[in-house]
Image (spheres, rainbow, N blue to C red):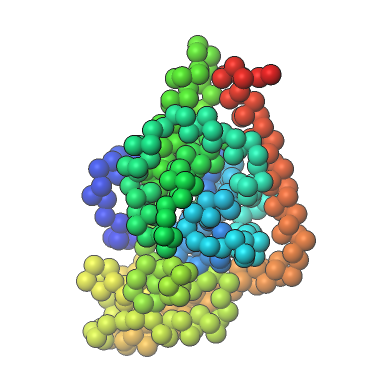
Amino acid sequence: MSTTLDTTPSDDLGVPAARRRSAELERSIRERPGRFRALTGDRPTGRLHLGHYFGTLHNRVRLQNLGVDMMVLIADYQVLTDRDVADRLTDHVEDLVLDYLAAGIDPDRATIFTHSAIPALNQLLLPFLSLVSVAELGRNPTVKDEIAHSRQSAVSGLMFTYPVHQAADILFCKAGLVPVGQDQLPHLEVARIIARRFNNRYGGTSAPVFPEPEALLSAAPLLLGTDGAKMSKSRGNAVDLAATADETARLIRGAKTDADRHITYDPVARPEVSSLVLLAALCLDRDPHEVAGEIGGRGAAALKATVTEAVNERFAPIRARRAELAGDRAHVRRVLRDGNERATVIADATLGEVRAAMNSLY
Ligand code: TRP
């Protein structure tokens, strides 16, 4: 949808180039989807919300259905960097699996795994750490940002090195594609640099061990939370994928709007109203200007009624599927076990190549 670009300014250096490259990649994917492996991941911090759904989940399912080999990572080590979730980690991990399955990730075609369960993936961290300097890690803008927003009193070594761990997440399976939002581009750059340096240092004359992964930027729409700020679980302003129809109605009813009764779609001047319009439009697969035009002078109450109905209709099947799956925890655990087994085979093979390239096969 071209309209979703309204809310994604790309004034950052490098972003326009990444966008052009992503458009090229999309064409190659459509021609030969089977050539591509993509890796995406989430930290297990709780249930996913509609921002996640329209921002990334939906795109993962699309790529999977096109025939791309999808690796879906649950970053259960990385999550230790940003908040204290250790005591509820199992619940969070299972919630993520349920959200994935309900949204349409198919465990027969995609590999859902937790990185803590893949020893060989984690072992890659050591040679990779030798390829980056402390100064480079300190300059990483996403790390700086995470540190600034972290609620922890001291920066842990894990926090400081997590882009390198993230490189291991991507490179262990030689993913060529990493569907990301703009904010993750610096991390991807770390993975690309590590791949290049590893190949240069240890490659000799043979074929490079690691392909350089590429970002697949999505034109992800920016959905705001019900208070007009970024949608996030910790702010309590998010509609969960798993919310009931009543919870959805209550959250939308309480959403912030503005004093202008006439509903329009103008993300810059009217962020709160426009985000509601966008949410309805995404659920209905329609143009937000049209949706706003139809509501027109009927005001915020009519807008909210439209949004609630659109969300509840669009997500009814997904929510029903999720509720059914939630009754079968054994299935959820089986999906993870199978995914972890598949990821382990891949990681072992890559680590074998890495050790051979480094002359450390004993
Ligand atoms: N950093 C990502 C997040 O904030 C999660 C993640 C971990 C990831 N490893 C990754 C994303 C590798 C892409 C590739 O949610």
